[in-house]
Amino acid sequence: MGYQKFVGTALVPIFLLLLSLPCKAQLSTTFYDTTCPTALAIINASVVAAVQNNGRNAALLIRLLFHDCFVQGCDASLLLEGSGSEKASPANDGVLGYEIIDTAKAAVENVCPGVVSCADILAVAARDASVAVSGPSWVVRLGRRDSPGSSAAEAATDLPRGSHTLGQARCVRFRERAYNATNIDPAFATTLRANCPQTPPNGDGNLEPLDLQTPNIFDNNYFENLVASRGLLISDQALFDGGSSDSIVTEYVNNPGTFDSDFAAAMVKMSEITPLTGTSGSIRSVCTTSETQAWGATSWIM
Image 1 (tube, rainbow, N blue to C red):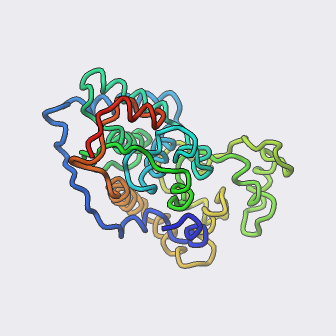
Image 2 (image 1 turned 180 degrees about the vertical axis):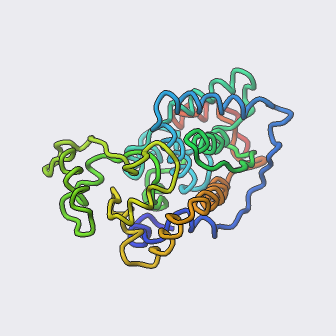
């Protein structure tokens, strides 16, 4: 699943691809019932507080899990810093929300030190973030362990582009569509151009919502925008542009419950992409840290 490959096949929504992935994880819904029974409640409290503080944080947390899992599996390697790290890859440019995971990890460590992995916190936080903005819930199986890290090169080749229903994108990401697209609503293009000057780097960091109508609520308005030629990114509008996925977009417009259930099922699949379990990996004491610090701060079991 190369990054470049998905640029050319963006017509198929990522969550539909995820539904076809095999599930090989050795995980359990009761993994922390004895060792840290309050872990899920603690993580949830951190996520709810973060989303109440800024609605955009829900999208950031879901995106964090997406970017972590598609690069060598769901192992919290995205959180490790350093030259040449996965986090430093241009493919992860603009990924935010690390401090929310750090806050949740610190709260859990205060109660159950050395028990709950950063990888599991990422998986639970993404589910709780969805629920916090009226999105679907799903069962998160636990028992992931943390890895020593993946490389920037792996992020460049493994990370696909996907579609969005929450969050915002920067002008640098939608400038080309705002000024050069033919499959865009003229009034929408005018709105984008007002917030995104044509000549870079002017306005590169200016933000626009991926869903115009309800940017911080999980719903199917994103697909309604596509039908109206108001997809913010080229990869968004490609989902409804006379191709094979038009019927899928139409289905989600007409049946929002189908979108919810498909999204939840896909998130379960994604959260269980080749995790480290059992005697592989470790439990890091700090989530966002350098690879050197991670090795020094934990006991690694190989």
